[in-house]
Image (cartoon, rainbow, N blue to C red):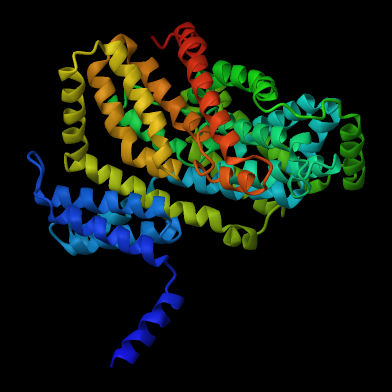
Length: 501
């Protein structure tokens, strides 16, 4: 009998698709939370929902299984436990409700569209063009990578695909061409510097457009919710608000990194030759690349609501509807095919895990959990006797630097942002609510600079071996503080000029 149990244990240890120790820790967290007394002000079902939500976040942080699997498990538990409804039918309807959310589909479709960048080679061409134009010095190559990120950001909602899948291979090719290789101990020639530029350009551009990273639509939803829909960040409004401070960060970042992690090789005339040689081998623009450029132009025009500005409000189009137009254009022109759509696993993975997190956030709000936690946080700040300015700054800083404890930006935003926004809106005078909200929005991507596990792009770039752990954390902290200061000063002035406060 003992041998049978041992054999069964060894079989399941080998066969099950989860990491055993993190799974046991996560299970212990769930059991411990459920055994705790229900806090005053919450119903037993609301507390059970909190336990499921927090356990899901812990499972994502510990990487028990792929995030999509954890999200599906959360939906299953919500449905079976009936914490959101009095019947199984109602609970499963609640669990699946967010899968029809247009904001989620905006990200899914935009990921599908961005597949055309890789398939046609347009992403590589864009990067090489900027290297050919700006590559006489290592700092110039840094600016080339930065501009490449900026050009691609509006169309690639997976910052991991953009920074890790498109820009990082270009960066590694250039570093290798100059014999900057971590296996040879020559990473500091230019690879360390360019890797950091690759990372920080990715995080800055992720905050400049709704469609630049997956969690941004969730941030839009939370901002609209805490203001009772009175302040809604459309694609255009977001881009406009983040334009000046974002560009300032992009302009200063390569120079700042040249001081914080200076490259040993300063002049790089051969980079231009390398880029030009690669462009020659690619040949002229292909038909697919031309279609991609035309589709991107169409998306920008429609997302910016130019038809409505010219012909009136009747021509206003929902951003998700616009995204579907772009996807349909790529499919019917043969730029991508249906197999490409079906095989883009990241898009369908995003649909599941993003939908589950949005669902739980909505249910936490409906059951009064967010209001309860917000009241606790607000009372704690009030008892400390802070003025609203200090309270607002504390909320932003607590939110941003708590990202040290998260390996997923989406998990962090899902777990904390709505409560922090709710408290801030209650404490900050109405005339200053919008700049506080915009600082929180900016912080939701600035925090990705902090660690080598802060977002999906981080482990890809860190894993290439060009940047040591100490350098990554030191530079990440300094850049995070610097970007927060730029948004707090230049950003606030810009938002006042735009009339938001």
